[in-house]
Image 1 (tube, rainbow, N blue to C red):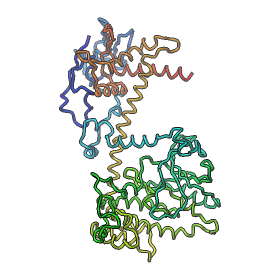
Image 2 (image 1 turned 60 degrees about the vertical axis):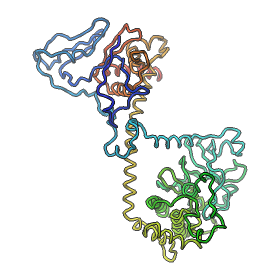
Image 3 (image 1 turned 180 degrees about the vertical axis):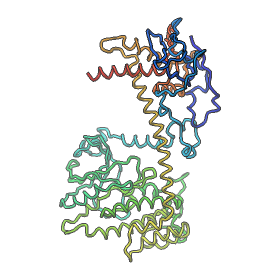
Image 4 (image 1 turned 120 degrees about the vertical axis):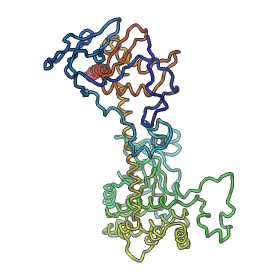
Length: 575
């Protein structure tokens, strides 16, 4: 006993805010129990009562108009129609005022992407309107993969890593060898690990200074200042402790962990792989002087960066540096190996390391020299921006600075050149707040890009909220369906309200085509789950597997059965 449900409109009329098409099949004939359209009117003065599987409708006490006082019901041939009266003619009765049922909450239905976001999304498949874009999904999955990396026992022994370090376990090295910084001030070897907190399970980044013995606890004053600094462009310091778990006296600094990050050195100053085995004959000391003067050619780091990219990096670096200086601190390690890039976010990393490693306990007031270190930060910022503009680390060497600035003048605007020259000017006292006028109206371009990104992420959040809500419904259904035993009753899931839910499960997932092939339609599943969650008054025809029993019920009644059955499970689990 099956009927073919006609398609409402062709698939060619789907737009971006329509539901995705079927999975695997384009448009096969639908052999499913019939589902009638949602009724648009509901008698406001009719009382409904279910007696023995048959639903009766009575006029309410305050409605005494000349309506038919006889109960309306239908039950024959094993078919029970619980809402037939909604579609029968109201002959001889007064017109009823249409009302909107309170259970049809429109917030349960995802309306599709906003009009201001639809133009930002790539014009790919229709599924991108209802599911996370492939680029964002790939980025999130990459971060998850990196966050969940673990070493096996043999690899842990090979790296000579302890099983636990203070309150952290599952150490995973994040770098093979320490990278030589642009200006090496720290002579101590160091290493970086990902670790998991034993109590909270949260992953952190551990920076270890090898063979370091803390001479004085006076530096903890500066550590507390770093721990209080919270900024979106600064990796926050969480904890500092000493340990002998590595077999020596090591100092460990605990920072927030940002997976899938890379340093500025790796992102912008690493030469691309050679193509087709070609080697530049002018590389090295044998190149002529005319070729040597071309900084862009000698670097081998690819083409120059667009000026908009450089200004975007500058704005984030100056924002983080401004927060550090306003907190009465100094970065002291502003070079490409200590700045990380996560997506489009730039962050200062390993802050406070220099303050601890180079702390002098004989200085009466360590904060008195902060002003001098802040001036050094601004000079280091100028060197970094010049290196980015030239795409070459050698451009900041004393003999190359003047030619590098001339190269910036040829390829970029005068604003960028003046910005770099100001940071290299050490004859006057400089301040990070003086850099804002030099950035100028470019700040609004960056702000507009950030707000557009927020709009897209909020729209993606609305999609995932839908997915989470439908997931909870599926959890309830599967906790009830096919449950082998409940309160010593082996037939609990096969009788009463649970039997209707079993038939609904078959209607939802086990429909077939005319020739018996599985009919897989994502839109059908999502639509029916939404109706169930909203408690729609639309009726649906459910059929047993032997085709001997047919039930016609509303989604509102199915929702009531679902809530009631799941409440029984919750009550039994809590007792």
